[in-house]
Amino acid sequence: MSKNTVEVTNATFEQKVLKSKLPVIVDFWAEWCGPCHAMISIVEELALEYKEKVKFAKLNVDENMATAQVYTVMSIPTFILFKEGQPVKRFVGARSITAFKQEIEGCIK
Picture (cartoon, rainbow, N blue to C red):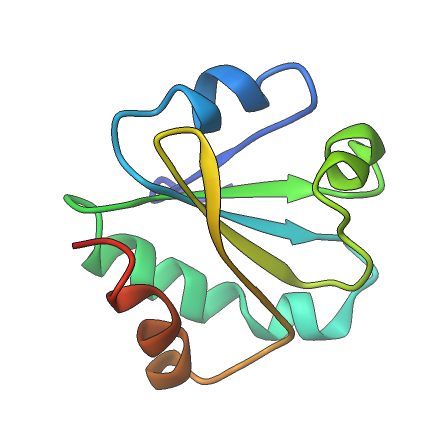
């Protein structure tokens, strides 16, 4: 994991995501997922750019199926933006950095 993203698990999800004072974008991913790997550099860049406004977290769905099931993650990568403990935005699949910014920009102000 990078210094700009935090790894979350079933055990740490509530504390690191739901109770976070900052909005949190959770990247639901898996090691075998090609599109997930394609998003790594974009997520890293955005995590650095938005570090004062939003926290970026990664949850491996193979190792943390319970949390993925709670949020009905059917395809990966799935990104869910949590604000004050509630999911407020969801988008699925790889996308450009510009498209990713457009997805989150209105939600993190």
